[in-house]
Image 1 (cartoon, rainbow, N blue to C red):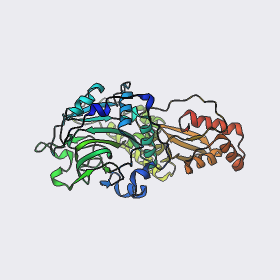
Image 2 (cartoon, rainbow, N blue to C red; image 1 turned 180 degrees about the vertical axis):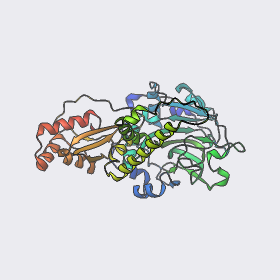
Image 3 (cartoon, one colour; image 1 turned 135 degrees about the horizontal axis):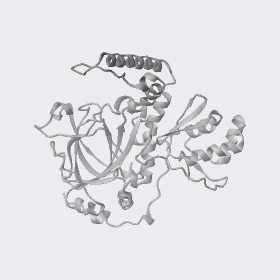
Image 4 (cartoon, one colour; image 1 turned 135 degrees about the vertical axis):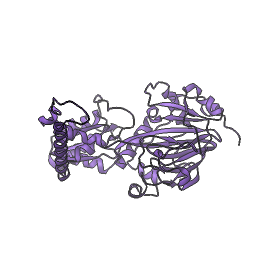
Length: 430
């Protein structure tokens, strides 16, 4: 097949001529998965087994394109965060590969790599495309995913790709342009592996789980508009058929212990035996741990068992750990506090990454957003419910009228809480 000239495709760019981004609607997950419902997706597919969806060729044209890629590459030149990086591979989708094949390259080498027959992977491209960051954040929220979401962009010359490997995250490939041949296992080689792995025939241990030769391997050609979602740990390889561009929406989990530790630490800080540590002893250490230390350890473990039983019986115990686990982060860091703008009565606002989620807990309404929990009084429930139920834009007078009709909350208090929502990026100007 004739090779694509990427100099002509990506060589010129002007950020002043960038196309406007679409507006988030709160239906991003449904639009991505259709005709599969989100309920069917989470119960039958997500992190469990593969899902291949056919789509119309222009299904993702508003989300990403060659033009948007050029602008992202231009913005990326100013990004110093190492999570954003570009790697080149000259593999060809082999069934067995070299784990050291991919090498980091600079922006000025992207076109050379592609014209030389390689593949480019731009990790965390959402850091260079603000709309992709909000889009990924919205999908993560609509899944209530307790981990981190990111987007990689893969551009391949004809015959180029990546060899058989698996990722330690759920990988959802979105074919934007061109075609790509995929081979993949329908199930995970090992559930939620801690590391990525590249398959090397004759040189693998059982630590990586089941090998491709012992698994059901499917083959499919992804075309524009198609989606392929693989569970973490599913073997897969890919090779471009002609010029190919795809986004990979990834869901990286967190070990849930990190969110339970604050409960345990609070208990330990209030207990003098935990604060003091194991008892001092005068015994010589000759083959055995001192009996006093063994006894100390057993007593502390018994206390932890009692604590765990107490937590299990407390229906409110999961609230804060679960809310904190809903990071809704897309490698953007913590929310930046913004200045309050002057707005007119007709100024439109919208939830920045729909849907808005809140939970009532201990007399407060809690919103988990971008690594932080924000607290509001229960009197603001009508406003938060309107924002959660209805993704359409709203004005400040509309919210004032809603609150007045519901509970007569003073206008100055409503405006204050609206300012707080805006300061932390939960709502945004349109």
